[in-house]
Length: 71
Image (cartoon, rainbow, N blue to C red; front, side, top):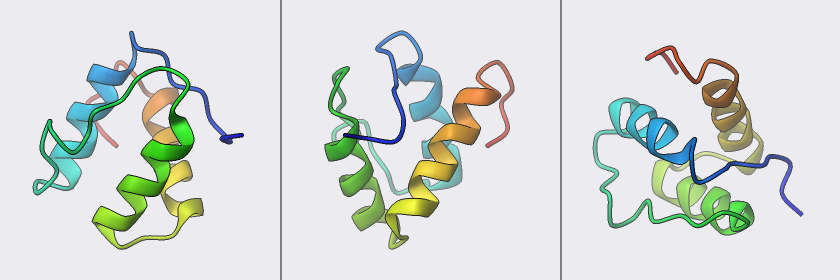
């Protein structure tokens, strides 16, 4: 079970933040459906060459500040 829960409603905002931070991430590689957080974390971790804990931290930070453009 993932350490984080991301709704389909929040995902577009989070995806934009990730793409701003890591400009090589495309819409195609960031496909996500609610309930697939583990797969998302693993994929992002591999693509940005960071460990799972860092990716979870980054996604949680994006969720907390969902209305802010910063990540």
